[in-house]
Length: 332
Image 1 (spheres, rainbow, N blue to C red):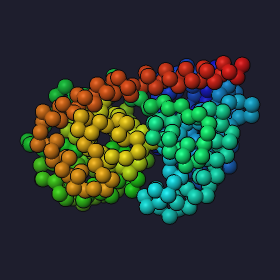
Image 2 (cartoon, one colour):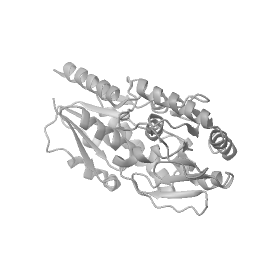
Image 3 (cartoon, helix red, strand yellow):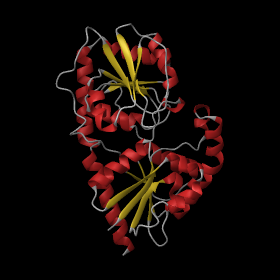
């Protein structure tokens, strides 16, 4: 059995497919620069010189990666074709969403033999918005819970509380709200943020904001381990991989109450879920956890246990491997 996975780099989907390549025998990741999607016909050549028994990629460009007489397995890592996303995308992104992306997704689905989604929310959204009757198998993303582990001893600098945001900087992740949240926080609470997998530059001028820059993914567990609270004001997540990583490291979470996020974060058990863009709710949630170390510990331990039970890398790899085996056995 030979599985190939052509996929653009610089996003969470690439991280997930890389983990699958490292944990499933004969699964080969074929990475390409995301700029190639600006001229989609260039994708026809990606991986075409490799003899494959199955092609696994994400739904947006699956049509271009399909091989003749080879099953095509698509995974929805998110969904952005509906009008809800319009205010959170640039003019060019919206044009792409309404034209090329919509067409390419439709062509990919027409060609697909098997479809999965990384959360129940995403599966339901795809079926509703695209009027799709085909089965969508939900396979939650997983994290390496043996690498993303709680710190045995968090390093404290006086009474400073470190609130961490990780992800590509942009409207969809809600990073434009970080300065507004920081403005309302006490001076002993600092919000640290990374520049994401795409290393998008951003500079927020506020004493309570600190940019960590681009962090190598292999070092990300150390970034979570030095934090006290994880903040994620995103407006939509297909799953929320960074949330799961933070939870695995024993962090309490303050995040938006939307899309797939409630499937990870249990409100008032593992964190605080806030209305999208409600600055005061985010501020109140952060302050409550900052002022209550025992509650931070309780939420963090709950999150760690939830990841170990439901969102491990081993479980994800096993479910994909079983689905791939099933698909190929039917094909024979």
